Length: 463
Length: 131
Image (cartoon, rainbow over all chains, first blue to last red; front, side, top):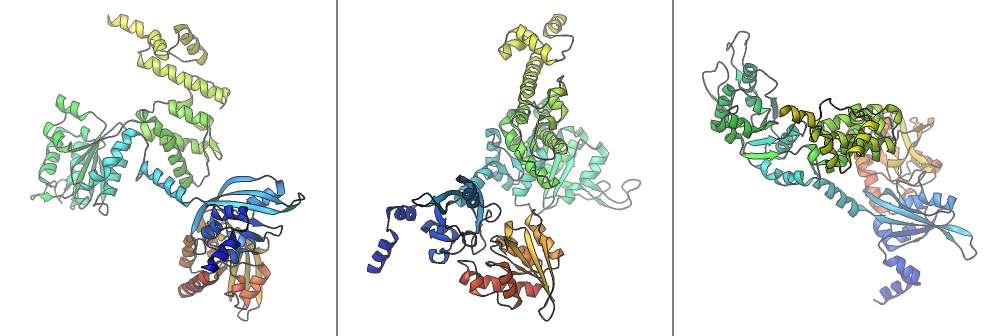
């Protein structure tokens, strides 16, 4: 015990040393030959190197950070005399673990003001990184990315939906990611090892769709030389995804109803029924309830598929996701195309935020992919974005600056207000909170083309 | 015939292989005489590109400073023997390697004497088995 006291008395020789020992940031100092002259307790803990081993060794051999060498922060500080605060990197411990850190540096001078070395403090960011990853994962399920409250609600119930064997109905406009959602449900389900078979029911004529779904036997029709398994058969032990279910003919609806109710079907030309254990996920961009009311979609089939319903909101209702999705697509296309695009310029992002996105996430993905062709490095700017986002009567000579971004946003707001008000200028001006003469002036200046008939003349004609 | 690559910076073994770019290649004949020496720049790309380049160069041993576990495993998968966590002046380290003296504590990075020696021997043996 007395030995321990002696050690602690030695360790806490000066108040400065006591403070350095108590803090959770690693601190070391070096002389002008890059040899370590002091190494605090936290530095020992973070690097896994004891003070005894560290003292008088070259700092790069002890610290082993990604910055050691050409990116040395301390070397830069000693050269310029300016401290560096919070430079990020990682160190490698003796067991090969990478520890994310941030470093700060300062010069050391003696009482006469002569440069005698440098000091480096470093912070272990492992916990921060882990928290950041956890936070990211809250906004990400499989390939689905969203921080919108509307989608968060979907994310919360997704594991439960995936675990159940019930039929799922996915509703959403075109491009909202219905197939991606179906795939994610499959990937989260106990059937993830089984196949995921997708069929677009709207892309095939009725007879072809029937043979695609249920298969046929040899001799069922001219040219059917041998048996062909249907998609239901291929999806055995897995999931079958029927997209555009709202486009299926009434005759095929009856056959689908039977599969969903009894899990049996007959391939074309077969004399015996076959059973299926595939989980069924269906999707449509149509209003199935309305189709049921109008008689275009069978009521019994509607109730059979509408067991668990997932509604995907259009992108215009979750615009807060646009920055997150843009980052996601940039990261993805960087990886696929081996590029290093750093991100998107603020004015270009503003333009994306103002767009109506009728094609939803697919349209956004295409816009980013298109901008990758135009942009070779740095940030994606307005000039790299597709014309349909930037055009609408503005001349290209205006250039990609903040002013033109402002005009583009103005033009988009005015156009949206006009469309919403059936081109009634007065109503549009009211909605925008500006006087109608200001609106006329802006329309003229921005060169917005308008239909000949306006809201008033339409109304007059209707009357 | 033996061919080794030494990841270096400023005429010393580079402290971190993951961020190192410069390689010094040494080829020995069966009697231990140097038959070829060369300098090579590694791609500043995905870690796997570095490992692929080493494999392309026909390197059978890599002598380097600190190295992350994922890169150690990749090198092992490509049958490249690894002598990691080495510190020192490049000519001295090359000399020690030629005389099979690299496991010496004098060339071990601080904090790596006991812990990393077993790793060095294990990975080196793993590499031999594969090759």
